[in-house]
Image (tube, helix red, strand yellow):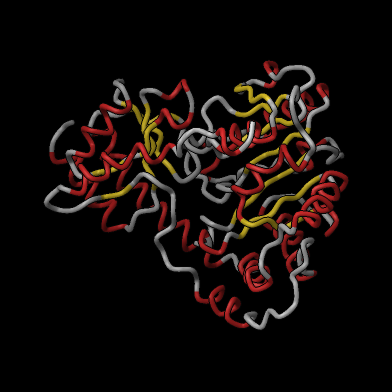
Length: 370
């Protein structure tokens, strides 16, 4: 399979619902896509401006300052104290890494890539582009022998599923039994809300309590898009097994895949400042506290969603019918079918709209039962 064989981009199917919602007299409330609307913090914008004299090629491996900042961040924020710069690598956002990882690992026809049952579609796309076979499975016991790559997503997009330390340790053991690289997409890890995540940090697959003392074949993937409002910068990174990181670095050097030098400088500054991250989390908390009770009052059940950037909701009917009913109230959601065959009755509601618009959505949901 090649990129020419990919289906139409799924979000094009949402356009009629957007048009329908935009006809509401009080305007559209777009809760469909998790694209940040809040300003990029001034400290980061200043750093970007300071680095605009970028006359030389940037380093694919990342600048020394960025690599050290990633190492320090994992120790400070993720409970991973023993990384070195040989364990980390910047990427041009996390989506390109998700899409290209099977190809960069040399996977192809006959290889299996496992990803969650309810999942961000790019895991499957990446497997298909490489010519590998994507398989949906959540329980490590169901991961097939011989799988070459296993994706987990914690906290999950769209459902907010969050893996505990014992669950992650079991996943690591199973991945090693079958000889797979285990890649953990952790880009919502700063956004814990309910259950243990109200008071505990979301654990990383690289946490020493998980790894058993070895990072072999383990990767953690992270993005600054949400915690720092850097979606437009395409600022992300991976960390983990030095051998796998080294192989990826070699491939990326050959392909010329490297974040621009000014972005690398801005990333290093962002990773060293925790204050703006706490402020952004508080904004998302306020929006969640507005939206969640309104959604449940309107007759929806919230599944999962104990962490992350979304509410994963169902009213027990076909998702496309729910999309239309919400659009009639001027609210645009993300359709569950985009995330797998088991999601035909769910919708995804993002917390990234401006607080005033989230409050307006809550008002509309409270005003009349759907």
